Length: 200
Image (cartoon, rainbow, N blue to C red):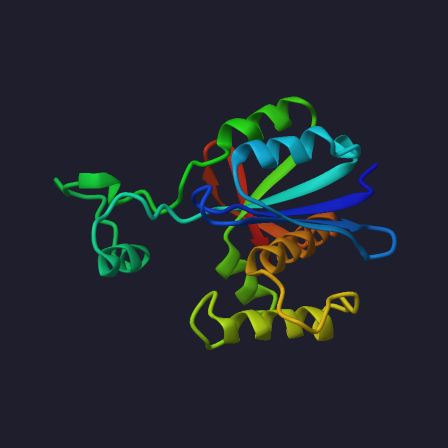
């Protein structure tokens, strides 16, 4: 029986923080929030997490920001069209939008019986009416997301001071996991043997 929803906002590298949130299904309350950095930290969290088989876990897809030189090239990558016909040069993994970071650990957890899905943070925020007009992950965007989570989704336990964006995105993962339990999600594509889901 599924008793907990876990959201993990996975950073693209260990220098970018990852966030984890655990929500109790019966009460809807957040019972754990934390910041993690390395994959060892994430592995240690799941090794000490007692309700692995009784949880539904949603893990975000981190962008692959490591292959191009120059800030404008990195930022422009998600907006470039992918050409699947003809001989399109795929230098520096240009067509790889998401990082495979953490896939080995998630496959190990899956083999242990965990129910794991992946999600794309910004697409999920749009579907849940949590998307702002501000630059993604800016302070104004984070403030909007925190206020929306408190006011629209009833997370009254969230503090008034600014929380780390990784924790806020992890909470979005718990909402999506709840929607999955309510059969209100759909598969949008596959990524490394995992279903990437979003709200219908």
